[in-house]
Length: 230
Image (tube, rainbow, N blue to C red; front, side, top):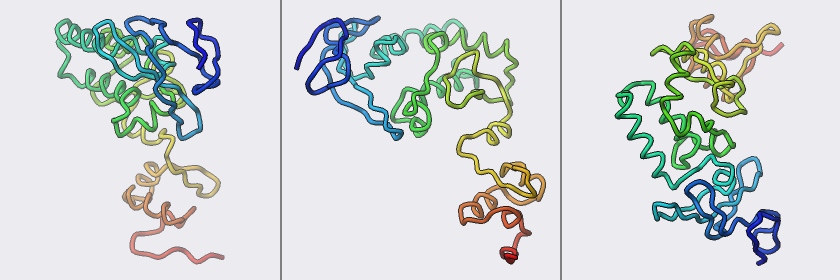
């Protein structure tokens, strides 16, 4: 396999991808190619074994390391997290919990929500990723309150100040990319809206949609069968 240290495209086992062997970015140095990860959408991403300045070796996304999204094996995050805990005293607050979980669903493949975030390429901006204080300052300046949750304005873009806002859990449920819309008399309704309008449990509405019910059949009175088709 041809190799060089200039990041040129190479031939061989990782044809079409750059050879990063020996290149250092932040605290990580590329050691050797590991594998290709193919996302559900068909995107192919190379993963490399890297060595951190702390001595630890691990496997990371080549793109994340080279672009600077991943700066260490995780030791830098632990150090900054420890500093944030001591500096702000917010380690046990709801806002800190939101910050931690935002990162987990974007960067931890073991997270049950990773498939809808990290696997889709959704990331957290550098400003927030490495320093909780930046996220906290933005949150309080942007109207954060304990009953609100963070939401991306464009669900296909990253977590960053320009693309995030604070909304209620109800609003977030209506905005989910997996939401099931129902058309009644030419108007589009979310299951949450139908629950309020027709006093039918939202779980019943979702169950009817899953069975294939549409339109008024979704909101028929409880205990009644589907309306007859005309």
